[in-house]
Image 1 (tube, rainbow, N blue to C red):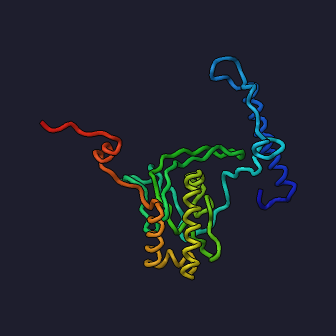
Image 2: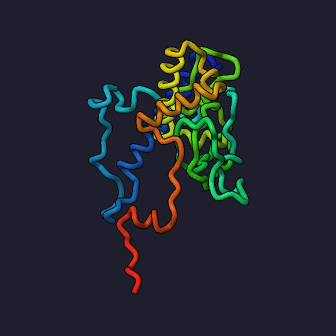
Length: 229
């Protein structure tokens, strides 16, 4: 979509529409029914009247993978993947955390033949350093375009993670303007960072995952151990 001519971009978008429509047609005519009554769901239809489009598809294509900033800190597989953290019982702890995420490393097959990748991760934190570009002062990423690798970006592409990133970036932009400092100064100044994290916490933003013992966790779901005799 980027770095190509307008005609190439339009062709790619049309191909994505055709693929979506072909899937809908398959669901309508050939998909094995869950009730065992043959194939296809004839009543399935697109709702262009709801989406406001003539073909019934979304107005905007979904981009699973996006360009990412070159950031002061890059989130790596070694920070979050269970298999890459032998000897540890959790993800890396970041002093500049601005949110939390819990999603696995999940890369699908690509049209170029790349294999899929599906790895367990520990629930992890979003480091503020991954939101700070190394060169530009007046730009902040708003979703999965933070500083990550192709592997770790697959853990950040889901909506809860994007919302957390957007929330942190929005709060950071306002905080930096109020303090009259560039966003990178908030991260690199211990006092400002602590104040910013306190602001996030006061607004209900989780900066770390809670740690519970087994009995504490069971008590939270209503379990009570039998009384001692």
